[in-house]
Amino acid sequence: MFDSILTAPLSVLDNLPAGDIMTRMSVDVEQIAYGLLQGINQIFSGFTTIIITLVLMLTINIPTAAVVIIFTPMSLLTVRFFAKRSHKSFMILSESRGKVGAAAEENINNAKLIKLYACEQRSLDEFDVYNEEMNKAGFHSQFMAALVNPMSRYINYIVYIIVALIGAYIVINGQMSIGTLSVFLAYTNHFSKPFNEISGIMQELQSAAASASRVFAFIYCDKEPASAINSVRVNSVSGNVGFENVDFSYDNTRKIINNLNLSVSGGQKIALVGPTGCGKTTIINLLMRFYDIDSGKITIDGTDIKAYDRTDLRLLYGMMLQETFLFSGTIRENIAYAKPDASPEEIKEAAIATYCYNFISRLPDGFETHIDSNTTVLSQGQKQLLCIARLMLIKPPMLILDEATSSIDTRLEKHIQRSFMRLTEGKTSFIVAHRLSTIRDCDKILVMNKGEIIESGTHAQLIEKQGFYYNLYKGY
Image (cartoon, rainbow, N blue to C red; front, side, top):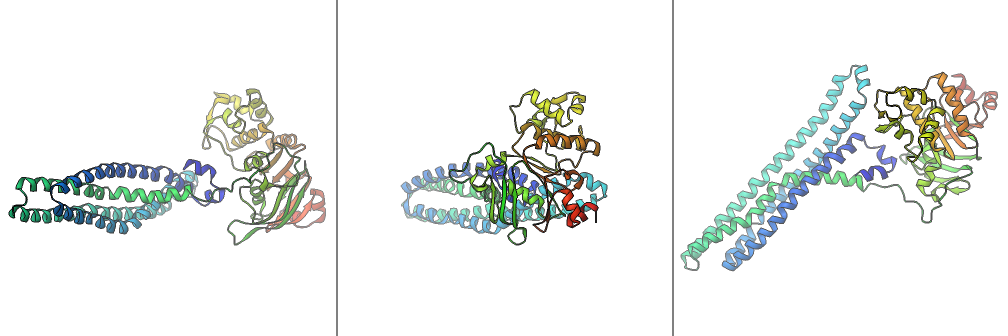
């Protein structure tokens, strides 16, 4: 499951709540393990008991043994009858667990927002809907499963009575002693016992089957396409990037990128601007092959990116996102995440270059301070500075900056911009910006709207043109 989380394409992860995935990985996997443990124990011991008692009964009296062999397995038909009718409930129960987990995770992550708008009761009411659905499915599935064992035992008791009557008839005719009949009846009990035990764990087996369907649906989801055979291995590039007649949609219905053509020379700083939903972030996803294009071609130094090894392609870029992503660990480990063998001097240099060193040195444990994404030790702006330091450390050949200074105050932003100027010098850089004041020095500004580039040029050229960019810049 964890391997699948790491290898699943973003299209799968984007469409599943994190809480649901966590429920599959913990609760559902545990249900499978428990069901298998119970099932294997009972099946192995039961199979052994059936074979031994069957041989012994056949050696005593073949006709009576045939009655036991024919009628006792009828209890399995009862098991099957109830299993088919309870399977749907177990599936709903398993899915409901995922919804409950997703709702809990969502409310934990948004606890401040819920309290801010005093929506505690509404959140509780919404949670109760999922909880009640799980309650009903659990009641129905357990009720149906609970009927299986008594019904199975009832059938086996009937078989026992039939065998006893037939045996009594045989004893009266002098073909079997009473002692032999009592032994035969004891074997009949032993023969039917495994069927009773299997029916007794029907609930665990059904729950395991329902959980398995959810787990394996995720494990065997469509993976990222493998790298091409004899894929191009590359460590450095000139940075010439091209888009040729590129079309893309997330759901195969509404185009996000429409016949996009773009040529970027190595070392250029390219800014992507435009209204929300115009396709800026989508271009970044396509450059990194988080998603594959529907048609057309994206090239680096004239080579289709599909010919590159996917990992090598992504290592060509250093990517700084608007969101801050910090892992559970020390500040040192977070800065060196992409370069774990970095020396203390390199880490310190990156921290100084991004103005992190001052606040890190004021912490009691300095670089060894333990943090995570939810830490209250650091402000949001300080977290973002650590992410920028992480990028500074690896010095990638190409850069992607998606509103990288959104959580930093204006005074510090000017210092960071100077650091970015040094970092981007001579490197192809794509900068997604909402604050247009941060991209005035870019070599080319691409203005996007509805998945198409409608204007391009320098800041001065676009202002002089007084078109779409001019209106965005002036706030119209």
